[in-house]
Length: 387
Ligand code: NZQ
Ligand code: ZN
Image (cartoon, rainbow, N blue to C red; front, side, top):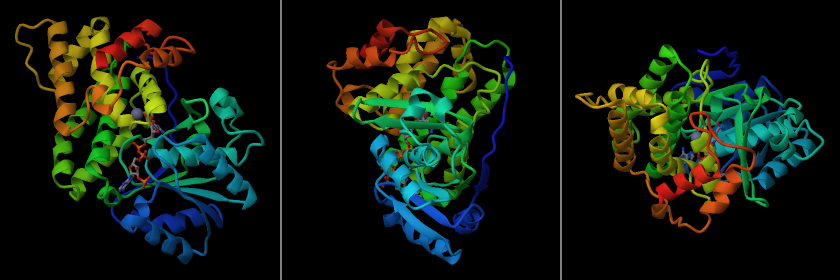
């Protein structure tokens, strides 16, 4: 196990009815609130009205930044920063999925910064801190609600970059599973793939002797596999939605990475796909991950065999680690297909045209990952396997 520092300052309010604490929570930080949200799902579901009423009851003055889109853009973040400065915003309130939360994080930091918020993605030490940030999560997927990451797309340069900084943990996140009842099937599936992928990134590594980290990761993966059919069959199954929601948070709140060196190359490759083709992040991951696994299987065959046995329950019989590992990877790909995720680039309308450009861009800052250091040729080979 490696040395680590663990500190997670986000206060989580989890469960039925917690949405109605939003006014009380925001009022604890200030009076002038910027409500950041997406393309309108919160208006259709009634959540917008419920939150507005609650904020009004607490005498808060509410300003709005609607229209954050999936794969959120820098221009919208800049608009939010301008609003914060013009209106002297004291609290940023994000209501939505990862795209809304990530935008709100950079807006809250940008509000304390003189320059352009894209500077943070070039040099994160420029983040000066931020104004208070509260979130109401409506989609279980990214873990943004309890982590220090944000991912934004610069639409002018087609760069989708992520960063992690201690100032980006939300102060408070409200996780009310009932707010996820209305997530359509496709986005429920993409969210599930994303949380599974977060566990993979921190489970497949070369750090020796990590028995607790392994078992924590395995229990999250097994729980996701067990509860996915329930949320797909009955989107209003409270306990299933609650379980999946908490899995998503724990999959990426820095607990699993404590003491291990994660990989993250599949995420880096996916960010190129969603930057160039604007596909949902989870869809890209379902395509890339099984192929990445095949590509690096020979680096850590024992770990892939453990995954096959413990997570998928595949008996060892007389198989070698590699054979067993391959069976586990095949099972993973088949599961992605069963739950309705794409597993080839062609299914999402991507051909060979830009593979080389994406491989080049992905490795511009150096090789990716840690299980196997991936150079441009490796990334290109993986992308070709995905066709
Ligand atoms: O925009 P609206 O109308 O709200 O609709 C959204 C959006 O179209 C809809 N939705 C959300 N909650 C809903 C709902 N529809 C009905 N009912 C609800 N309750 O779902 C769609 C997708 O939303 P989005 O926020 O884009 O999804 P997700 O949470 O998967 O976030 C994806 C973004 O997060 C980044 C991804 O790269 C991508 O940009 N990531 C952020 C990470 C982090 N901060 O730690 C890590 C991840 O690996 C990831 O890279
Ligand atoms: Zn992800």
